[in-house]
Length: 278
Length: 332
Image (cartoon, rainbow over all chains, first blue to last red; front, top):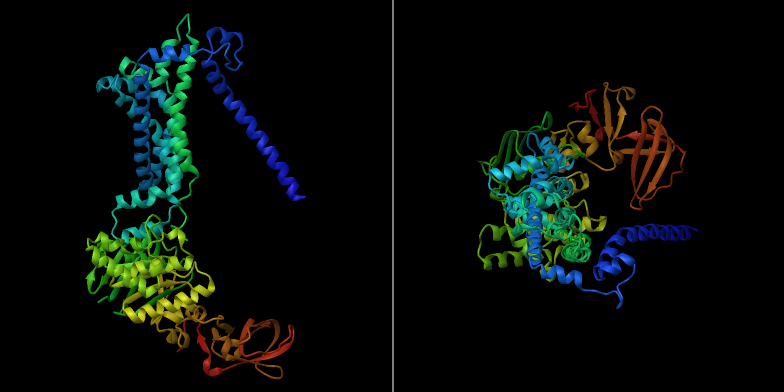
């Protein structure tokens, strides 16, 4: 009886999840198949699979011939990886301080750092632009890295602080008695134990940065600092849009972020906390 | 080489005072147990001695030197934690040797020290394993080994046996007692289990709500408790408390241990009705209810047959009873 009921529940859960997966993947699927088709075939039958009759490399040829696309990819990767690194480093350090040390205004500081989750950073675009102009950082990747680091920190601090509270105090105290510095305790004892949380934060932080069009367009629209999302815009004209090229560029843009995601998701499921305490 | 002295030590978290002025001297080589119910501040006091918590007021002295502002690593002490707190990324050998490595000792010395500690605790075959590959008992032995390697002035134990199962707890308790004999080091041990306290301690410090209730050897506390709290806390099963006035004594309470009550079917001072019997083979515990005194425990040696709701009579061994005034303090 209970076994049957749970089988029914499992089927229902899988049905719901599969449906969601199909809905979520469908646009990606359409982009990828159409990127391999000729312009005529895209409009004639958008849902048709690329077969010898309608197959065409023209989108990818255009994108690669454009030449600068390799640079755009490089820019996107530099910006994403650097921002991610700083978000994780500073976020984890702030979270450690908030969860580990008792000091006056601890809770208030935590709330202040988490405030950014509720206030979109884009509200401050004008001020950020003025700041970047004043400091001469317009059209540099540094400007983007700084903005994205600020954008990612609140959520990172919030999530990591919760996780770090769960790391055994005994373990940290054992380190202190054995003469480890606070930095060693942080890097060698605490960070490995919150790795799954770090991976979660990394995924949440990385995707909006990779996909962002707003800040590259405003802060770094120069040719040498364009990111992939901004670069793909050259094919979207006011009157004519080169759909083959746009779709090919977007298909290519999926690959690096997919690779990064796979790296982090492996961390998500790997439990290395076993044996630390208890 | 490891005498500890606490002088008027207090600790407050905000406005709540958790340690309310503790004065205590632990002699060199002594095994001192802090015991008390949960929340009495015993672990906090231990962490203050270790330097993991700041002291709000008062002095902590080791060998006469004030330690209040000395970092934990420089206090020359080692601590064994309830949750073992082994470093998950290091092997058993590296776990045990880390403190010496941090202190910058030569490799050969570290190797010799870890090997010696491993020999004492029968850890030799496990030296290259990681904590995740060890059982609970083995992990606790590694944690103890990590403490031994440092040859500290003071060993601090924070409820080290709480996570072990009953059989392992007894074995590890015996091992700790043997270590104390072999090392002749000063040890401070925190537990809420009065059996551990009684079996291990040279001297027991009974704490309640941040204050020392009584300090003494296990038998002093058993035979001469200062108040109802200590009398009730030390000894298992718990001491019976009876209303003194109804026994024709000065008002207050009378304490009598279960082993000092005699039970008879025919005659005795206090009539009672058996409400439950626990037969343990070597001893029998009879719980009998008297309308005035409540549930009283009688401990009998050997096997005895008493039926539930049987009428019995209890008699106090007058020379073994303790009298307490209405405030709970012992009448002397």
